[in-house]
Image (cartoon, rainbow, N blue to C red; front, side, top):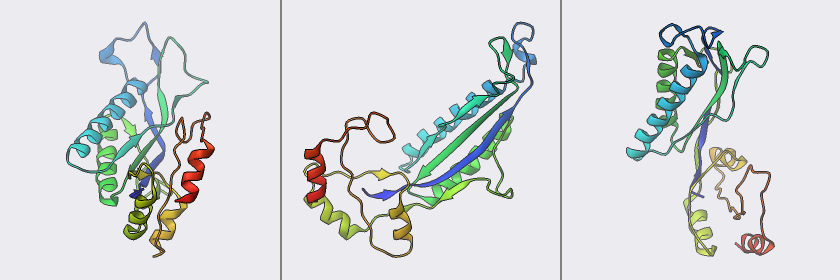
Length: 194
């Protein structure tokens, strides 16, 4: 693994629109919070593509997105959404630049991302590059050596305080954070030998 992506997570993001009946209000008169949220997330996808084309490391995720279950309905224009916007990169600068663009885009789309002056506006963790010497040694031990940036992990904390760190990942059939994770004992043995 080359490094651990830092994270800038807007936990309490929301778009405020205006509730209305879907059959009675035409497009020019709607303030649809779902449409505004989708526009924001679509814009952030284009920012992600631009950053990749410029050679920057970035991932953008919205792992939570919902309307108010006490207010939503199949024939209502949504008046509010709540969501999380998760920005990750091996570059703290890239995360700051993209976070600033996310805030500007949110304002254009009638959405609100928590501002830096508010307490706990974002959940932040810095990026961490793994130790080059240890990485080279692990690459020489691996059956199928390749590197990629990983998600948050305790090893980032060790790196930030000067402890040389590296990590071994053992492949698993369905990927991590998946209820169907599956690792073979043969793959576990390879990781243990490394």
